[in-house]
Length: 58
Image (tube, rainbow, N blue to C red):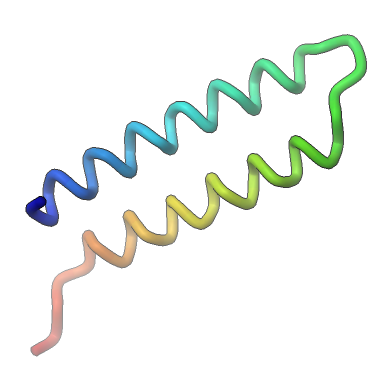
């Protein structure tokens, strides 16, 4: 898998998590633990995208 493909896959996962967060927050009684977990996973994926997108300094 190329870096570009990997970044695109991560962006898709990021969007899926964003949708899951939205669904959870719009429920009558959102699960705070689930939201926290989803947001942490989303942030980790965002960090991976940024790291892969940065030009290498080699």
